[in-house]
Length: 192
Image 1 (cartoon, rainbow, N blue to C red):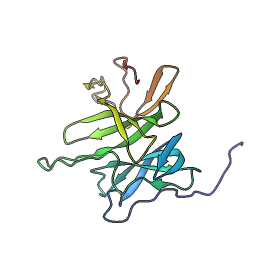
Image 2 (image 1 turned 90 degrees about the vertical axis):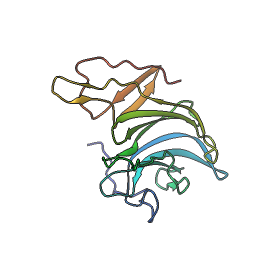
Image 3 (image 1 turned 120 degrees about the vertical axis):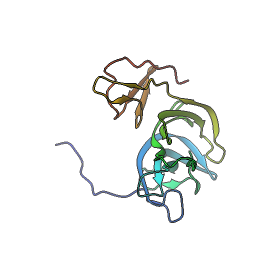
Image 4 (image 1 turned 30 degrees about the vertical axis):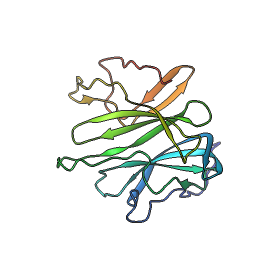
């Protein structure tokens, strides 16, 4: 059938208690680039969701590096993109995660798209970060992806979350698992 079957291999595991990703790690996004960490060169960067709760609250985003796609090294013991639980509200607070990364310069200028879920709002965020030197990341731009939250004809809220992005020839492509945008055409701006 043309497919190569191999045994499954766990390449990234949950951290040890009480680390921020001690319950589970999931939803990876992997890109190729040119990354330095602690004086060593790496070819691949992974963004992933980590969590400490069984009810999937307070998710946060971590990053890891590899040269062979099998042996991954987590960067730092802390989340890369943090979520702070708002203790003034008892509502469910999902956190941040579902990262989708795009390498904008084939080196270390990375667009991080990710879902953010607070006590009252779910939105898609964008952070453009220079990561050639992972010991000294530089945030170049932060924004919320433009989104018009509406109730569609089926009675569901239309909003962007859990999206995956690709960028080619000046066009930004997006897919997401929320209800379809059948009532309107979504217009986007430029990444760079």
